Image (cartoon, rainbow, N blue to C red; front, side, top):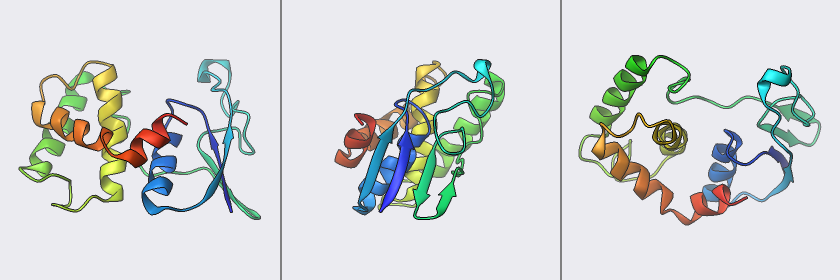
Length: 145
C-alpha cells in the first residue's frame, strides 16, 4: 500500500486528490509543514520535502506542475498563464473536454493558490471552473485531510 506524507495546504493535496479520484488505497502520514526559510529539505519526511510517496522500497518526491510556480513568478506572468489556461478551457467543463482528468487536479491546485493571492479575480471562467473542481467529493476529502 502507498504511504503519502502530507501537510495540509501544500502540493501534496494534489496527490491525495488523484488517489481519491482513482479509488486507490493509501496510508496517510500527516506531517507539520516547516517553512522553507528554516532550511531546504527540512520537512519531516523520508526525503525532507513534500509530497513524498512510499511504495514499498521505492520513495518518490516529485509531482508534475501544470502551471509551474504561477504564484511565485511575477504577477504579469501569472496572468499570462491564467489567460492561456482560460483559453484552453474554452467552454468545456474540464481541460480535456467533458471528462475529468489528472490535468484538472494539477491546474485546480494552482488555481486555488492563485485565488489565495488574489490573481484569479480577472478570470471569471477559471473561478467557475475551480468551483466545479472544489465541489468534487474526492477533492473535499483530500482538502480536509
